[in-house]
Amino acid sequence: MDALAAKLDAKLTQWKPQVSEEVRALISEVSPGEVWLGDLGLAAKTRPTVIVSRHDPEAPRALTIYVPLTTQNRGSRYEVGLPRLRFLRTESVANVQGVGSVPETRLERKLGELPDEVLRKIRHALRFAFDIS
Image (cartoon, rainbow, N blue to C red):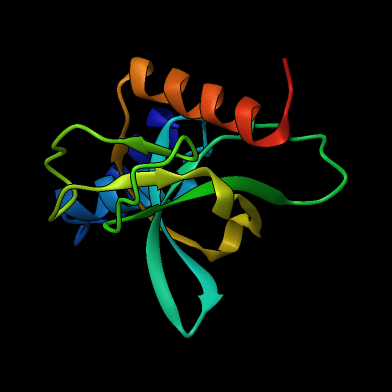
């Protein structure tokens, strides 16, 4: 991916450095633990989501499984509190009851990544929600 960005930088004389970063973010593979702003089709609203599915270029459908983030903490085992993250405006929780899938094309931009420990807690909450040991 860095090689592609370098080629684009070299070939386009009016290329700006920030455009290279934007292109890199657009063509990056979606990975577990990343937080993306996604158009989930809910009342024409985009919202931050945590990617929980693996990247699989051979998947039969181009869908990514996500857990939505919300600011409404109800204090349940279906929610995982997030630490204060620089890319989110307010304190948030991951709501595993809202798990869903979305085509990768509806993920608008990557906001950042969660610490590994938080992703582990989200996976634990998903196991609880699905009653998986």
